[in-house]
Image (tube, rainbow, N blue to C red):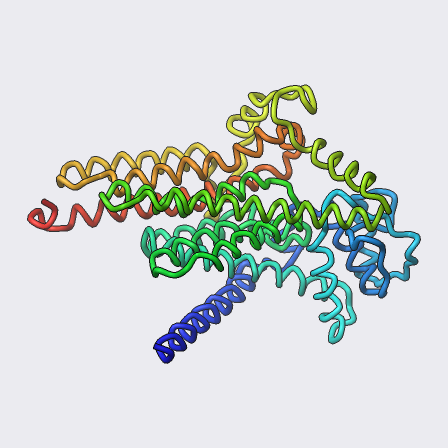
Length: 435
């Protein structure tokens, strides 16, 4: 038994090593480490990270460990120039940004210090940091694809990967030092790992802890879009529940697992809020001032009903992103795919698969119901933020379209491959085998 356990660990290690090599290859192929060849997504927000890295590079600090800038304007790109030139600064020049914990600033600041041991040029270190973020995004994406492969097959996993490789928004955004897109996938990855543990009969304690840690880490890098990540965390469990229910297998236990997973995820969010509150206490000197800062940051972004924060309605936000904004979500050379053509293609795949299964006298529900539920959840995930934070969503046209990639676009591509391949398999299977 001990030998078998070590064998499994070795195979897992080799698999991750292979994925890491592939991630490096994809990063180099797609030039994701270059700000010139693939562009930037939200360069203004990165200013806060450059300020924090410059502070740590010069062995300075401020209470709370927040990110910040050395200029009066929060989005002033001068901070990036100062980082690249290693411009001398003094602690009193630093303006802390206290509206989030800023874990990414501290983590990248430490990594920047490591890179500075063998690379003095700030521009070269910047490229190394972009490359690191891109490699991590591909690595986490490949791990998610491995989980998708177990539920939908190889073609679906490849389609999910293609949805990252040929998507303009993630291609620009994966390098971003502020958003760290790879952390957006961690809750979904934790949910997939929990489902795999159930299948293998393993205790779920450590996997629920992974869900907690994934949500904690993501929130310490920013609470924006948190509703999206909480939904993605539950999607793998919904798939497993619906599959077992429609297949006639016991499924009630999955409902309890969903509840425990949700509690672990919300616990991670609560822990991140506690850390942020403690940081604010250190920075402002009083708990009351820290609480005021925290609640002001939250209420400036979140609105549960129309008119609470601004005059924008939920209907206006949804109309903007469902009708007015027609950003390309996938791009294959000169050919681009937007939201509704992609949706129509997946809907057609559902109809095709249902028709083939009916013609071959196969039960359709174990195939179509899990797929439909997960597709609906992947669509609801980005919409949840548009509803929860309508004003923030309405004005941030340069940010919100990215939410379609977490995970409506990759989920749609995976389901397209899954449904079409299932229909083709049924068509080529001898009739006697499908009775």
